[in-house]
Length: 305
Image 1: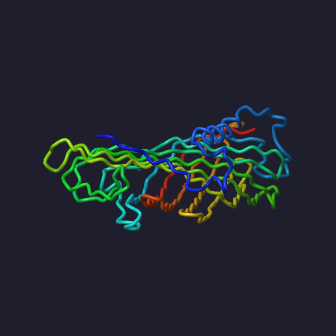
Image 2 (image 1 turned 135 degrees about the vertical axis):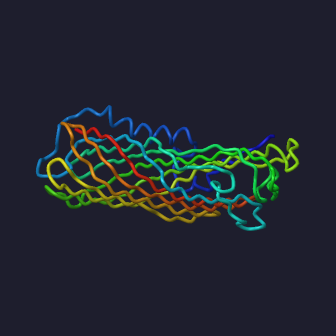
Image 3 (image 1 turned 120 degrees about the vertical axis):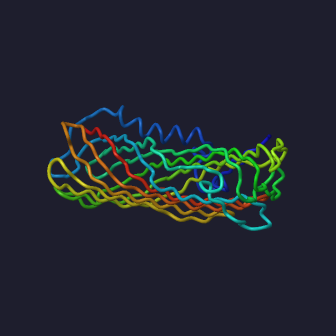
């Protein structure tokens, strides 16, 4: 069955630069920011020893195990409002509770200033016989009902990339307090394909797939505390809310964890993280709403100089 994808940037050209207008460009930019940490020349092994957490550059990679994923979404004709939201896990059998790669890194270009970047992605595919009717949008932008008993193939993807600047306004041999801001980019897509109708006949019903890219500015706060020369714990929080034209978005994220230096520049750490994204977009033909909360544990290795 044929489907058509919606790719929207929702008026962002007036508030964001053209660099982030197309997915491959901003993806490459932020990906390069993370990978580039490996290529930076090390001009000094450590900053002033009077400062805690004094690495010049840092990269961590680990398994982010999502143990709770609460997602609701709706895609309906604009004239009928937001419509009834569905839970992809319950309705379509899509499960985002999995373990995925998570990358984080930073580069301190002065003892008090650093660039921070991170990335992770979760996705799921499923095929299921619907237990109840669901409302969606066809290719003409009109509301269509996919009947209970229909066999539906679907997929859901969610990707988060961030790049920020942080300034350490308080930094001594035990404690680092920092604040800053940057850009958070979320990309999420939902594909819905009706395979057969309730009678088992191959369906001719057409539905729209949706792929949205949402860049949001963020402000954040961070705390590092050194327990002893080899062990420290950290707390990070970021968020922002913005309304513009026909869309509005809210993002928040919090992380807490600890890290232990096991040998020279190698460390091991564990942390808990939760992120929340709420987006509503009202296009000329449809209204799309996406709410997603992910909570998980991160076990990682780090390398710093």
